[in-house]
Amino acid sequence: MKVAISSTGRDLNSMLDTRFGRCNYFIIYDVEKGFVKAMENRGQISGGGAGIAAAQQIMDEDIDMVITGSMGPNAFNLLRNSDIKVYQCKNIQVEKAIQMLKDGGLEELTQVGPAHAGIGMGSGKGFRGGR
Amino acid sequence: MNIAILSGKGGTGKTTVSTNLSLVTGSNYIDCDVEEPNGFIFLKPSQIASREVKMDYPLVDTNLCALCGACAKVCQFNALVRTKKKITLFEKLCHGCRACGLMCNHGALTFGKRVVGRIEEGTLWDIVCKRGILNVGELMAVPVIKELLTNLPEGVNLLDCSPGTSCNVVCSLQYADSAVLVTEPSLFGLHDLKMAVQLVRCFNLPLSVIINKYNPEDDRIERYCQQENIRVLGVIPYDREVVRVYSSGKMVVQLPEYRERFEKIAKNLREVFPWN
Image (cartoon, rainbow over all chains, first blue to last red; front, top):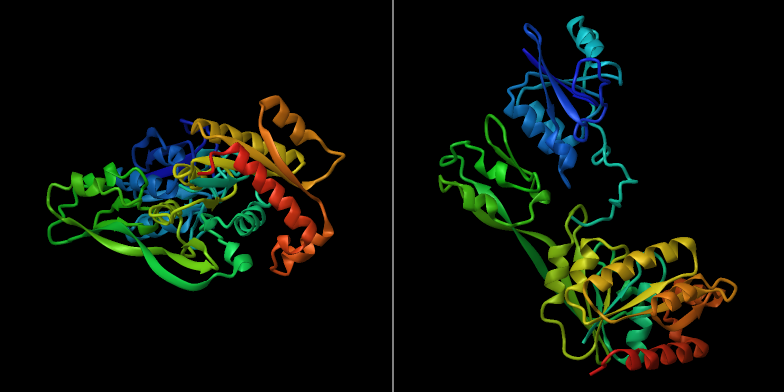
């Protein structure tokens, strides 16, 4: 069983990033074997459809479960249709989030967050900005 | 000749200036702010003809698709995703570039067309009024703007652009021969004016400025224009009467004082740009 956690850093001590599409890294963790790797999120640098790009990366890695804060409608539907379970967590250490998942302390994400929520409005990309 | 009316900051009076200038000079009015075109509210053209704007999008033949994911990989806009069961399309993200079709080695991709907006064209006396309308929920305005600005009528066309300096404005400027920047004497007005000036200079277009909501006690715009050697074509005072007329959907040039002002601006405009 492989788990992907949206993270601000590359190791298990990093804090979980509550944004899915725009997080810096995904930490890949095998429930049986432990830490596998950290990979940069391609969605982070994409002009649009960040959640979709991130979901594609998750699917390509054969992930079974995702831990993140919230997720927009496009990514959520993609993962759900691919039978990948999404669990919700606050911004705590990645290691602690994994422990909570193992203990059955995390709830499955059932409600979709708003679209474009992870885009910083101060980053020079106005909402009306054409693509 | 096509004159782009832009501003940087929103709400400085692009539509007020373009519609009133159009009336005073007899130029055609082209509303390029396809996300929320509002010039027709004031000009009220008649005999409006409408046609649809369509965009290409990929169709996947699931019998031929080998799920190799080459189409999803090449897509720069994340419009295609390879899941374990099928290729999923997010049509609103698709730019219609057809790169996916070039990459598919299985002949599984063909292209269909979908409606993203429409173009309307009408007349007010001998003035041609044209506008693009982007359908609600669509993300990309550029295809509608491109369609709107190809085959423009003869004579002088005033292009009422979107606010900001986004793709929508860049696209409109590609069809312009000169630019008029409408601004207001405020911190935001000046800040965004500077961005708009930078953008117009990238296109090497002649440019001039009109100051709306003019306040004689605030000369920040004039000082900037002097410094940058930009001609100020005229000013429109910050006046309650203008707001009253505007908000009832009427033309500001119905007020004799403002007709005179706009005629003066038009005269200056003809001096600055090669009108014919």
